[in-house]
Length: 123
Image (cartoon, rainbow, N blue to C red; front, side):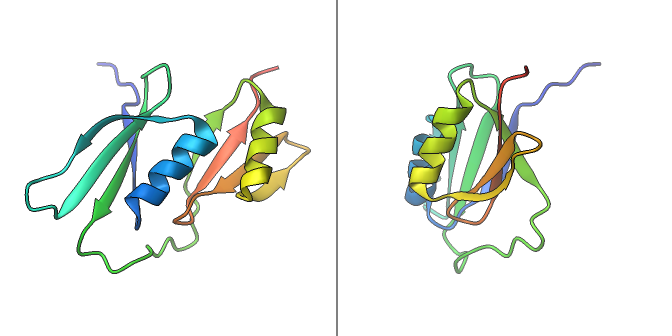
């Protein structure tokens, strides 16, 4: 029996704002959308150019606003082929929330407070 990663899910308070963030910050694109007729929720599956993994954004119509992320000890991790350009983009966007130069990584924060780790390619 074998398993492979398929997707991760996060709930978002503003789907359009989150889509714009993940498209600009990481170049992810919408692979598919699911929204029932009653518009009670919306799912947007984002993926990179490889299509090997998806980020599922879930918006719930009856949720009152921002999500309580607690200590937010969970995060996504994305590798980039151009660390310096990615850092410059994220710095320009104002979304870098933590840097660890000794480890060669940094984190950005999305509109809902989720952290995404950015790592360089293996050296």
